[in-house]
Figure: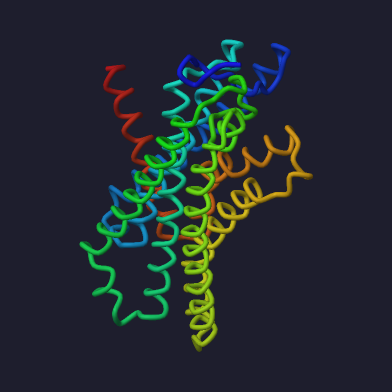
Length: 319
């Protein structure tokens, strides 16, 4: 029995016991992490450098890529380091910081996806008012509100979670610190406060989900009324990547936190957590660039410029 005031560290879930499997886990996570860094980094660079992409849709996409980089950088590097050094430990303050950042980045991403749904709704259903409703100042305010909501949510949940007495050991059955796992270590009914806060946050998340669904109902209704097939194709190309990202993010998150306890097992919990915390940041850049010609052209420019600059530097050094 230990109290939270005397806890110095937590023990995270180990992916494997043998050294070979630990190194395999390190290599796999390294590949996923580098793919996420490369994909999101290219999108951030392309949107920032190409003036053709200085529009609300790509401004929000840039913010989404930054949030994706933050979320995957919060969880994956620590897990990789633990496998590489054959340890499970994370400090008490490190665990608190990890929970804060996970809630911050994922909360901000969900709010931003809601804002992006509104942007697509205005672009397709209110095109004549798009310039007024989605001007530069409005976009900055919406993005700031998404980041601020994530920060406020994270501050409340982290402060509340770590004010609860913990006396059920220090073993966290997950590869990073998350609130449900910390609550399992509580030794009093005070965890109900955090449970109540989770319910409140879930209600807000449900409101955002309903807003996204209603937005897309109106979007698809409007798209089907477009007379030309080319116009419909362009509208769908604008919306389908965002819808795919929203579906992946929400479905994996809902299954992780709302699945029946009878379905719960260490392996299934681990797989589901990987699906909602690691996969989306890595595949979001691919989803957004797959059907977007403007973004593909901008990414080609960034890649060609990078290789050209590297080649020029190499030639200069050789001379």
